[in-house]
Each structure stands twice: as structure tokens, then as C-alpha cells.
Length: 399
Picture 1 (cartoon, rainbow, N blue to C red):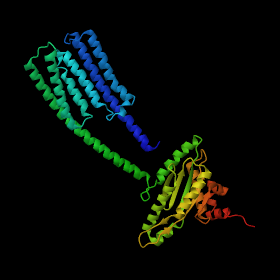
Picture 2 (picture 1 turned 90 degrees about the vertical axis):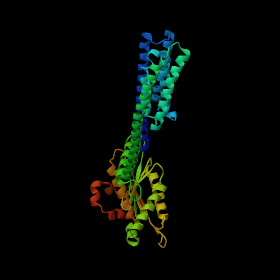
Picture 3 (picture 1 turned 60 degrees about the horizontal axis):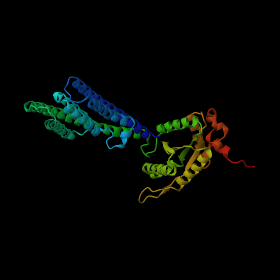
Picture 4 (picture 1 turned 180 degrees about the horizontal axis):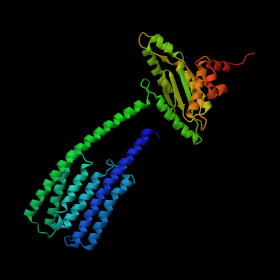
């Protein structure tokens, strides 16, 4: 799994935890409302029968518990709004309206639930939607009063209801204005966080890539090698590396200028990227040197891939622009395969030594670690063995 997938999973987990926490807060408010209904029933303010009261508690409890369960099991992710805000608000509003209808004596006290619903919406809805929701809540309250006038024997005192409604309207306006302000701050904060995330991603990309070619840099190459080493040390996994050193590259800079040299490096980098498999990596470690990391690749397969890379680079024609001749480059490659439990430096040493040996064997060729003299594979003997001696040692014996 790559780093982007890991970040996406971490964000999903964080979002789900936030949704679950808010849903549980809404559940707590719902059960608190049910407790108020129970107390009001005991005091005679609710004209529910015992059976109707139990049915109300059972239905409301199932509804309250449904939303946290959907979020906990990730079933909410299939919906356009994973927070289930509209459904939760709708269910809470329905339960509050039922309570208001059956408990007219404490109806004014239950108005606070409307304000809680509005505050709950602040954290999810756009600020421009809050006045619409406030108007819906006011209409719902009026419908409860109208239903009591039509279907219940409750005597409605219109002066009292007028004052209560006026206070309710003022409360809705106040909470709406506060919600709009909070919502605007939330939207602005979200945009700023998205901007910061983009800047962070860009900085992370710059930190791991080479400015000129866009390939990975030396620092990120070491991270890749450590990850590959960890996989290999667990067993059943092989990987190889290839050092690629462009031949006579200094002559390109001296003859055509550094701008032409940069263009050549960019062209070679694109060609290497094109030739490699999706599971492989390539980094520029400085100047005209590149390193490829061949995942799940043994020594023999690494040599075949290296030959393809060498041939592709040799066939590459680099156009410097109108009026300029196209130039061609060749590369010397050194191949080494990781040996379980060895250090990364040991692997790099063998691959680098193989590339130097290829340089001194005529260039435009490949040298694998198995072709190197034993003395060169020993770090302590490296200073005692000249590269020219390596090339001499690799020449075929003659009579």
C-alpha cells in the first residue's frame, strides 16, 4: 500500500470517528428528551397510555441507535452524505414533535430541542441553509399547535401561544445568526486546511524528488531501499539495484552547454521511467548518475532488465532544438542483488563497484556483481584495488 492510500485510510478513520462522536451526542440528546417525556408522564402532563408510552420508547430508541450503528459498521459510506445529517435531523424532529403533541403542558419547555437540532446542523450544513432550517422548525411548531386544536381536547390560549412563539422566533433568529457565523468560520477553516494540505503535499513532493528530472532523489532512494530490505528480510522476496552512469557526459556540457546537458538528463530520465515496470523505482543521485530499484527481481532478471535499459538509452536521440544536431548517449550499468540481512551500504557498494567496472570495460555495457573480483567485494580491500585493475582483472585471459 502506497503512502497516499495510507493517508486516505487514516483520514477515513478520523472522519468516521468524528461522525460517530456527533451521532452519539445526538443520541444522548434524544434519550434525554425521552427521559423528560417519562417524567412528564409520571406527573400527568402526557396523555399516553402505558402501552403507547412503551411503544414510543421502543421506536425512538431503535431510531436513535440506528445511526451510530450505521456509522460504526461503515454502512453510511454508501450514501451521498456519510454524516447522515438530514436523516438524523429528521428523526430528532419527528420525535420532538410527537412529544410536543402528547405533552402540551410542557410543550414550551421542549422548544429547546429545536435549538439543539439547529446547532447540530451548524457543523454540517452550509450557512445559507440554516435560515431555511429555522423556518422549517418554526412551521413544525405551528403544525403541532394546529394539530392540538384539531384533534386533541387541549384548550389553546392564543395570547400565551403568541408570546411563546415570539420568544421561539427570537431564539431561532439568534441561534441562526450565531450558526451562520460559526458555519462561515468552519467553511473558511476548511478552505484554509485544504490549501495547507496542498502546500504540504507539494512540499513533501519537492522533498523526495530531483528538481531537474522529477525523479526521486537520494534521500527518498534510501527510504525505498530500507523498505525493500525489510520486505526481503522477512523471506520470500528478492530485489536488485542498478547503477546507471551516462558515458562521456561531461563532453555534452562542454560542447553544447549546460542547458543541453540538462535537456539530455531530462530525456534520459523519461526514457528510464518509460522502460521500467510500474513496480520499479528510479532516482537521480547526482550529476549523470541514476539508480533503479527493481522490485521482486532476482539477479538474472535484473541483468535482462538492465540490458533493455542500456539498449533503450543507446537508441535515444536527444533533440536540442532547431539548428542543433541531435545527440546520442550511452550508459554503463552495474547490477547487484540484495543478500538477506546485509546492510544497505553493502548492496550500494557492490552496485557502485559494478558500475565503475563497466566504465572501465569499454562503457556502454553491463557488469553484474558476480563478475567482480572478490577483492573489490571486500570493503576493506576497496582502497587497495584501483578501478583500472578491476577492468584488467575482467579482461579474458589470452595465451
